[in-house]
Amino acid sequence: MLAVPGVVRLHAGVFGEVATYLPGRAVTGVRLRPEETEVHLVVSPDRPIPAVARDVHESVRALATVPVRVFVEDVESPSSSPSAS
Image 1 (cartoon, rainbow, N blue to C red):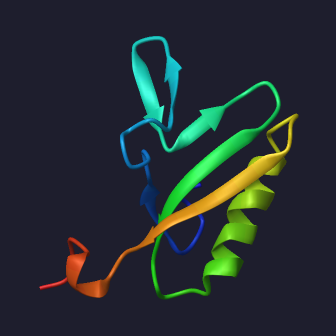
Image 2 (cartoon, one colour):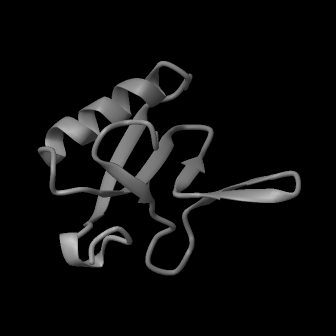
């Protein structure tokens, strides 16, 4: 997902509730459920949001056996990006 152009990072949700727990670590921004997979993102304003969401959906759908839902939680402003000075 992070390789998809326009994705800045995964988003853990307002209270950090979006995560998948694996042995020894958690993957924030991804929630695996028996009935669906959720992906929560922060995106860049450099690409159209629907295109970024579609590309993430397609890449995850290729791996998932259940429906995939993509949530764009935030858009990174150019002034808040780490490389902006």
